[in-house]
Image (cartoon, rainbow, N blue to C red; front, side, top):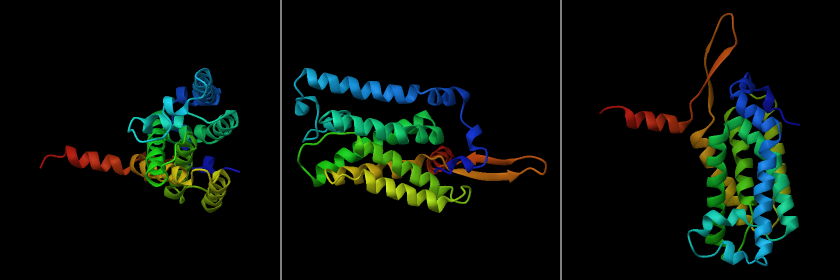
Length: 220
């Protein structure tokens, strides 16, 4: 039960192109193709995860850690999870902010996992936790606009509990915090600017990053 659709007029602010792309299933299809293709390539090299970029000591592995999966079950679980939460984040944030959240979450997940747990690891679950954190930030930030926001947050906390596997909880925590932090910084952050006497409420998107960049542009 998702109540995010009750935010006034938010379903009208994203471009028709993006709505059609996500609604048509292309978004989910693209995710599955990328995950499956990389996994097939792994099998072709007999699953040598360290060779492909499993988490270890080198910095470049922070970017490859979330692209790899240990087995077909691991791949399918993460594809299902990504297809469940990904379109929601893309609808709320738009494609560029979605990519920023996902990539930041993936890197922060790998970095946190390596800092606290040196053993090699792979998987996109940390990045997916970041997407869940992004939804949580959106609900908390707009709780005055969303009906039953408290119930939504409780549902999100239940999802986080169900997704926790105990295998690499540090990576999951790092991804969750990374996604939440970047979402707080780049938005969306909708605020009511004015109320027209004979029309709908007017909203503007003013995330903290916008204020920071505006200050830098102002002459001293």
